[in-house]
Amino acid sequence: MPVPVSVIIPTYNRADAVRQAVGSVLAQTCSDFELIVVDDGSEERIDPAALWHPAETRCRCVRLAANSGVALARNAGASLASGKWLAFLDSDDTWHRDKLKRQLAWMRAHPLSRIAQTREIWIRRGKRVNPPATHVKKPGDIFAESLQRCMITSSSVIMEKTLFDETGGFNESLRACEDYDLWLRIACRYQVGLVDAYLLTRYGGHPDQLSASVDRLDRFRVRALLDLLARSPLSEQQRSLARETLIRKARILAAGSHKRGKVEEYEHYTEIARRFGG
Image: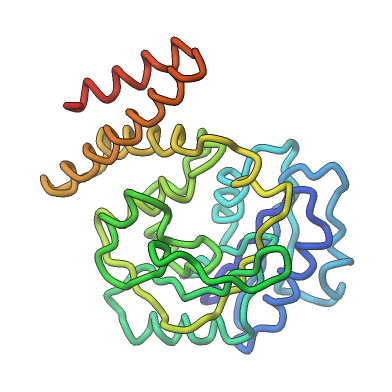
């Protein structure tokens, strides 16, 4: 019989961190889940025996042949999932022990909702910090806010697997901002629920974090916005907001390219801004 929820943890070269993430899943008060750890071609193979007891039947680890990025790793896990619901957890984050129990209860109490997230605690270099006001989550229609920055945290999400499949999953061609891309494609069509409780802890400040190692993330956001405008069923208001955001980001990138003497990049982003009315 299929389990209600499939938990997917992608990991790359984070043996110690993923052990903590897995531990927070196995400690859940809701025990009816399957856990799929996707080893994205780590230099040292992940040993399942170091993550869970050999008799644990809810867990499995799959290894990709080569490091291919978090988007492909999450998609690979989702393709193996048997649950009605998908829940993602990054290998350097942890869940509160009631996370799945409370989210599943919320989803069952709101049968028209297809996706929901939770509030979160931020830890930076070992200390709790408050997120900026612009990052505080709200429920409902969050499309406009999501254009400016990623307003959905992958590690806090629970969503219908059918919704994930319908929207095509994470864009594997994006080295970064693959979450920004997917959540925009969903937020333009659906309201996003919010379980008003701090059920996720996010740890930052690691030198290997993608957000720390990939510069100029707006390059990837521009690509996501171009794809959104070309393929997603936007209302006129949504399309106008997306165009305005794209033009603004393209202008910023063009100015930076001009300052650094990168002529081709400058011309590329200037042309994007011009084409969309800027």
